[in-house]
Amino acid sequence: MRKLVVFELLAVFFLGTFVGLYANSLNVGLGGGAQTQSLTYASNIIDHLPFTINTTDVYYITKDVEVNGTGITILADNVVLLGQRHTITGDGSGQGIWILGTNATVINCRVRSFLVGILADDTYSQIGECNIAYNTVSDCEFGVILYSDFNYCSSNIIVDNNNGIVPYTAVYNAIVNNYARNDVNAFTSGQPQYWNSTKIPETNMLSEPYKGGNYWHDYAGSDLDGDGFGDTPYQIDVNNRDYLPLVDGVSPRCGLAAFAYASPNGVLSVTWKDNVQVDKVIIELDGVNYTDLMKVDESLGFNEYWQAEHKIVHNKLFYGLSLGTHYYRWFANDTSNHWNATELLSFNVTGTPQFESVNISPTLKVDANITCEGVSNITEIMDYVDLNFKIDDNWYTMPMTYNSSTSLYSALLPAYNQLANKTIQIYIVAKTKANFFQTSDIYIYHIPEWVTADINRDGVVNMRDIGIACNNFGKH
Image (cartoon, one colour):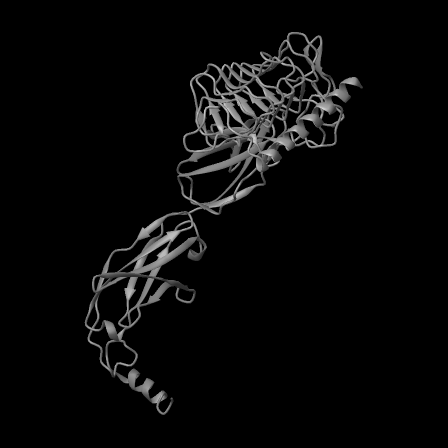
């Protein structure tokens, strides 16, 4: 009970401190100090490294920054550092964020490639009382080290470090709801810490409905009752156990955009998201499974609800697919052995559009017979067909429409009488939904002199023109 009360008091204390300081930063200028300042921004804007904070204020990291050695040193008490999801990158030495003051709040920073990612030191005060939350720490020798007491380390992603969370020579640090995937996830010098709260009805780092302890990637226990917590504690040392280790119960989720058409040589792509690492991705195409996929991108960070989200993108390149319909689906398995699959989807492989014929009538109507292998109806695959024509050294474009009765794409050039006795050039561009382009030959056509009696504009004066005139005689 004593542990629970102390933990809850710490949480309330840190939250109140953060809110109060943030409000003060918006309403009160707390004055200058000896911090290393930007030449172009206010003194609480961090746009370069190294940066030393000597004055109580709210500080904002405004862009990704790099440094050799230590990045940000916090000497003042009651400092709030807001990373705004920007990355601090080191050279493998020093500390990313070195906290020497008390009651500091470090939120939403991305720290990578330091000796120590975030260090709460006890050089000036053994009582740290710092709030370290919603940060991502990776590729360091030590992710987070707590030398001072009574710090609150919660909701951080600490991955790919040699050592993850190290509360060393310190006591009663509250270390809860973190995501740890490191060579060694945690160790201490034997002093007791708080590695879990009581079961709290609030969404945790794994998108499960209850908060308690932390997620440890090497936890080997089970969750037989399905409450989102391991049935046995996660053992750190004889004095430290996480009694409510978080267990993944969610299958990978697929963000797949279905498509209808593809080329014989094409790339099939998929994006899987999960709250833990996706272990294996498979594509089944026409009943055959393929695992030789290309990993295009992989990341682990926070989603919009501040839960851990692992995202992975895979591509599979296929050559020489046959024309016609193909069926496919994707499978994914995460490190908690949860499988998921998409529904069975299909796409159609088509060829390049072909111009079987292009005709220009005396009335300047252009007809094009266009075919495409792999489809029975040309309109199923065509994205657009454009007629391009040149008059007096100027090129113009107009769309062609499909006539189902003639099975032709057609367009009528405008202003017939104004084009009389001129030479025009035309060509047609056809694009399919599979992104195939085909351009016709360039056709040259000389328009004859226009005769007023040639009513139907077929290039000759005959009985058809007289018939049109008779049918419309006396009409207004």
